[in-house]
View 1 (cartoon, rainbow, N blue to C red):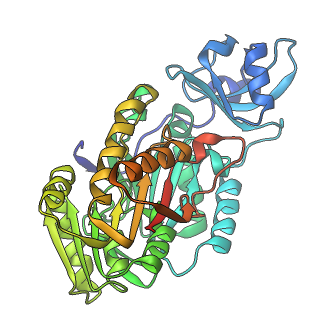
View 2: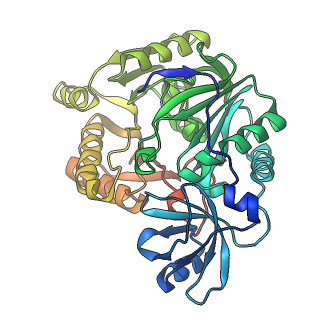
View 3: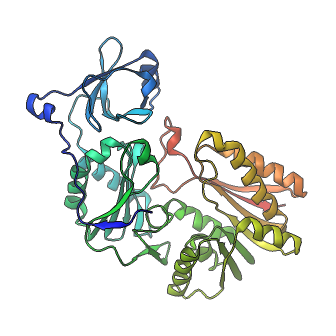
Length: 407
């Protein structure tokens, strides 16, 4: 990760100079194929469907026209990504990013409970494509994942300041996708002091979030509701694989006799231990190890558990990695099932967008047949509701969580 730099980000003004001088917005014409794609409700226009760009510049707000010159909407334009444009609106009216952030917060008030940490803006699903904003108590972490949102950063930060008066604002612009946008990968503190971890409440537990170096933007907010579901079914001796900062382990410790939490990251486990101590949980044993190797050795040693959680990092970050990812998912599920007896609970997850729920269920079914286990599906779940899913934008659905029982 690049070193963190304190101070405000410098950005190109959100309004294009020519637009300011002439009141004009650059028109960009797209093909019939691109037009048809927009008609399905998807907000992306690929570069192969761009016919002419005029003088559109990086991150500029442009007018999208069909082959007949008819207005289709307004979008942010990228000069480098294969996703050439991301639609912001289908109308000619001015786009108010602050109003959309306010609408996103109103939605969270309805779906988030018992937590001071949640996703405030979920990109396309909140009609703010390529923008992520996560809230950690009185602090905010944002990610601008394309040229358009990067260019609009001053407007976004001003809106966040006006609406939330946050103590800390951090730009976690270190995501790999920014390389495709020819944007620097960097972490910067835009306001306040983020050197110390932020403490948040989640499902009645106190947790620590490192806004500068933690996984994603601090902790795994998308599993918040799945933590509770897993704890509801978990019992006896539990094994939490890929525990990171202990999300599943902490929740299961309240319902299980003991929990073994495993991860290959020493710093993440150190945070997990502090989280356990902060909540007075003494029945969790944290172990630094390679999960694949550990599951194999436990299987050879004929260990057994009553509950196992598999929450690995994304195995498939692109389509050409799907086959290898499926082998990885099958491998860990095979090894886990060998450790479960009758009545045992398996919580298995995939955060790879390119691996569908159907694919995950199929490989778990194969693993169950290979191990002679018959599995009953107890719950089929996705990401928490503060990570909303748009029906016509499949990319907004990425997390799958299946809870099964050995029958």
